[in-house]
Length: 104
Image 1 (cartoon, helix red, strand yellow):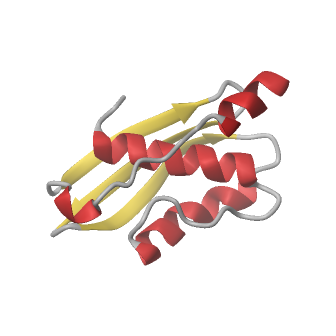
Image 2 (cartoon, helix red, strand yellow):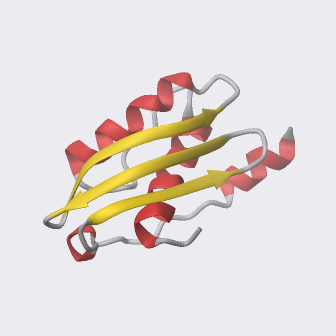
């Protein structure tokens, strides 16, 4: 159990300039064993227009499933985590970053 928490704590976010991302549909994931997220991010005209949460394996992190909407609204990846679902929030955000950076 402690291993996945350490893995989440070690996740860092790059300063991604979304306006530089070419139009397209991007798939990315993040897996820390106990928590896993796979997303599809759609980029058009320098904006993330939609994020579909394709898969989310979590402990008690279902409330973090609002994170994709926050990312679209704020047009940035490192949005505030959902209280009580910080680890899942982090994993979902990293999956989005991995998608649009194509570091899979």
